[in-house]
Structure formats: C-alpha cells, structure tokens
Length: 353
Length: 163
Ligand code: SF4
Ligand code: SF4
Image 1 (spheres, rainbow over the protein chains, first blue to last red):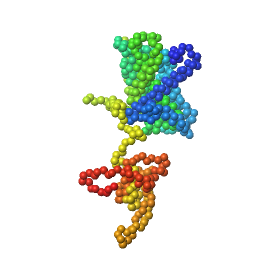
Image 2: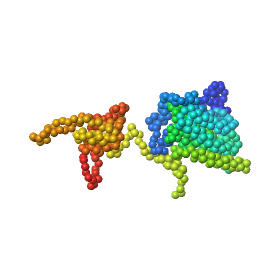
Image 3: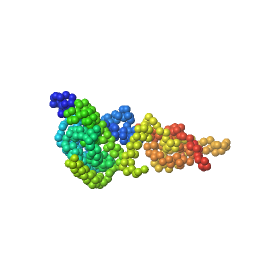
Image 4: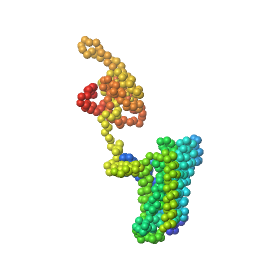
C-alpha cells in the first residue's frame, strides 16, 4: 500500500520513487504556500484592517512567487567568523525534518507514503530533529543574538515536546494503536456513546489532550505567543539573524511547511484525518472503503489542516509574546500536570469500559 | 453582560476586524491607484511667494537643520515720489530648500514676517536622486499653486496676515 499503487498497481521501482518524491514535495510545499498566502498575507492583513499584497496576480496571489524570486536573487552572505559548513547545513536540517514528518501522514485509504506501525512515535521523534537545526544555526552564526535565540529555541522546544508527547499518549491509549492510519480508522469506525453518526473524533473525547497538543504545537512552531526564540524586538531575528537569501527562504518554507504538517498530524490524531465517519457510506473496515476516497481523502485532510492552521494563526495574530520564564513555567507547571492527569483519566476510563 | 475572559475577547477583536474588513473593506487605500486627500493644513511641502520675500534671512537663521539657502544682492530702485532719494531693495538670487534635510517643523513658515512661505499639502515629490530634493526658487514658486485658501478664522479671532 503506497501512493503509487493508487495510480497503477505495478510501476517499476524508479517510477514509484519518483512519484513518492513528487508527492512529498506537493505534500510539503502546497500547504506551506497556502498557509503563507491565505493566513500570513491575507488573514493577518484583514485582521489589521488592511488588504495585504494586491499587486502580484489577482488579489496578490502570485506574491509568494515574487518573494521567492526576490530571495533567490539575493547574495548568500555568511559572517566571517561563522562555521561555514554547519552554517549552510542548518536550514537544510530544519527543512529535512519537515519532509521526514510528512512521510507518516496518511492521506487516504491507500494514499500514503508508508504504513508505519510506530507512526506516532516516529512523528514525535522526527519533529524534534528541527531543534538540532535551529541550535546549529544559532551556534554557527557566531553572533550573540543568534546564539541566544538558538538556546531559547532549544529550551522551549524541549519543554513543549513533553506535553505534546503526553497529550498524544491519551489518543494512543484510546485508539489502542500507534499507527496513524489505524488511529484514523479507529476514530471513524467507532461510535460515541452508542451514536455512530459522527464516528468518534478524539477532539471530543480527548478534548483536554487536543487543547494541550495545540498549545504545544504553537510552541513547537515558535508562533507568536511562544516566539521568544525569534523575538524581533530584542534578538533581531533570533537564530535566523545572519541568514539571507536562499537559506532564509529555506527557513521560511520550513516554518510554514511544518505548521502545515503539524496541523495535518493534529487532524489525523484528533479530527478523524482523511476520512469521513464510516457509517455515512456504510463502510465497516478500511478494506471496504471505496477507491474514490484516495482522491477525496487528501482534500478532506487538506480542509481540516486549513481549519487547524486557521486557529494556530488566529492565536498568533491576536496575542502578545510570553516572557521566557512565563513560557517555561507554563509548560512545566500547567501543561505537563494537565496532560499527565489526562493520561490517567483516559487509562482508567479505557479499562473501566 | 457576563465578563468574557481577556484572552477570548482578544480573539474576538481580531476576528471581528477580519469580518469587518471582508464586509466593509479595509481602513487603508491602495495608494498609487487610490489617493487620500490630505487634511487642509497638512505639512506636505513649503511654497515660496517670491514677491513677498525680502531676503531678510530670518527663516535661514531659525531653521534647525540649516537647510534653507538664500543669496541676494541689493539693487537701486527708482524713488517712490518724484524728487525723492533712490531706494535700495533686496533682490533674491537664490532660494533653495533641501527637502532631504528638512524635518517639516514649520519654523520657517511661522517666523517669516512677510508671509512669503506657505504650507502646501502636496506630498508626491520623491526623487530617485537625493540631490534633486533641493528645490530651487522656481520650483518652490510653483508649489504656490497648490497652497489652499486659508481657512476661515474663528469668530472673534485676531486677524493677522493674508495670503
Ligand atoms: S520646515 Fe523646519 S526644517 Fe524645514 S526648512 Fe522650515 S525651518 Fe527648516
Ligand atoms: S523669513 Fe520670509 S522674507 Fe525672510 S528670507 Fe525667509 S522667506 Fe524671505
């Protein structure tokens, strides 16, 4: 079962690989572009009572291409005292972690890159690889602001990794599997208190977990209430200070692609993923799902992703920044105890029923 | 009304603004296509009424940036009355304002005792070359056309000066 099998059952290996690479690029770049245009350019502008980019293309929709063109033309500068090899490597590590993350996201009954048993575990492990990239970027820049930003980022990402993992544990307990595809199936095949019309999206039964997960995602993405690492009013631009042109572009794509991919994972874990409740079409297991879901599924997932990103960005554009100590306190003293309690309650209920 | 927690209220404000922008349009205008009329007394550019200037140099000396340059010479003019002595008048040779330096404080306009300087709300005079921001006598004179009529004074105000 993989993406290639949707189109043709027996393609040669190179064609399958090519398809997967293309699929991966689409799965990373399309959400990134949509998120940037729809939310960063338009929604933020509208929330500030202005129109945002309007000149490039209809309603400024080509603005992103113009920006990419601009960045590509710029000189690739690195500081004289920078550790050049590592300095150049850092943005790629950040972007690579996004690509590694998208691999486990299921897009349809057969439309997935890999059906991975420990998918949740893998996703959480890989998502923290980007910390390495950020830390390296901060260190290699040979700049005090970058270093401070990098260290802040590391401290923050590690602190919020924990509530995120713990929030997901609730889902894993309830679904009884770590396979993301199985989690989707479990949510849509299940029923809530005997009512199967909605399936059992965990956003309802695991509401506390969902809230904790979303807050942790917000912090992992260093979006605004948690944007201490790039606090532009004190650290210039944190770990990105010394980056320009192409490398800044990679950081930029990485940031918003990760926002998209994390939202996909959130939709998979809590909102029922690519599927609609099975009872709508009389499906029972994953094998009885009609083939057209392989086309519609990604669109459903994409829609859910847009909704989740909307909330992330809405919070981002509304709130001021946390102070560093408040940020750490919030993670360790509020989120972690809450998610631990959530695990306990979930486990007890799971055993009880 | 029950008290809404501040965090939720904040989300409400941004969402409300977004919806309002969708419905009624934004507070901003698309500048090169649409232009806002600046207020009547906007400090856009300073215009020179050359005939009124006596090159007394008051504006030059009170400009905090020293960005007004005046050169002049004295000329003999025929006497006012037949049989009177010939008069000396100041002729203005050069009157430049360097808008690359000007900070639009308006001191020169206020200080001019002969009503030779006026504010005009015109603001579109940026230049690709910074040196072109030095407006000379002719150019400053041309701005006179854009100076609006002085607004009506309030009732009972002490009327001084005229355009
Ligand atoms: S507005 Fe102020 S700065 Fe500008 S020329 Fe007049 S006195 Fe000088
Ligand atoms: S203060 Fe007025 S009259 Fe005197 S030099 Fe300046 S513009 Fe001319």
